[in-house]
Image (tube, rainbow, N blue to C red; front, side, top):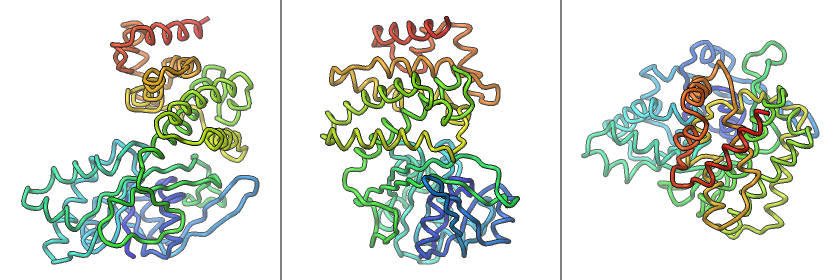
Length: 383
């Protein structure tokens, strides 16, 4: 199986790229970082440090790399069996043109073998959004051919891959936690579904997308925002603060009640899932910086993301939301001169007040009681 993976960063190398390479794929990374590409193309291997109760080093081999702006990338797509991404939600639109050219090339050379594309991003239905970007670059006459020959497969991914200083001075080395989860929508494949260890199939992807969004993502973000407020540098330090741990656990339990109502998850098993995530945050090997985890607060405060979406779910099912409200208030306090969204949010709050910021960024204009509750917690944090 020939695979092109867009995104040769830590997540690309440490998670999806590793699973695909372990499945004996002919694996090619595509990225715009020329120095990284040159190193990968030269070494064609790298080490992954898997850390949990034990520290295991695994070697990924037989990989290659190409600059995603190089015309060769289009040629690779034209003969590939699968394309995956780990580039970040905001970059998907930027790679769509290259994917469209590769798909066009497939038709020109008469390659009607199935191609399946999976965006492995921290977002809901990322591949479906990528599909719309790709189709926008193709003429209408190509759309039916795409429907018949190209599968756009949505997925849910979960693995903490923090930045690290490479061991042995190797810039390709990457550290990951033991836990990983890659769930794909089996109904969206074209042709045979490949067998890849670590890739799980489901017919109800949205349940697992929201389980991860409402639990891992919600808890991770709130830990970071509360951690920064109390002066901690890492998620590990923050979650070991009993007060923060209580709020984070409470928020995940509140969002969990939404999931239990919506998808009929087993309450005991979901509590076990929450407990597992709290243990992951407390992994001493993962030096996950709170500023990195908290970046792009405006996106994370948007109505379809990890803080407001579960909050709205508590309204839908008339459930408690006290701890979620605290987490959202903490997010509005996030500050980082290195993050344009944090700078813009702080400026808006300074000029317009936090109540207007909640309405604008969180989309809660129609929920004045929630706006009032969030603003109350925000002001309380100022004291």
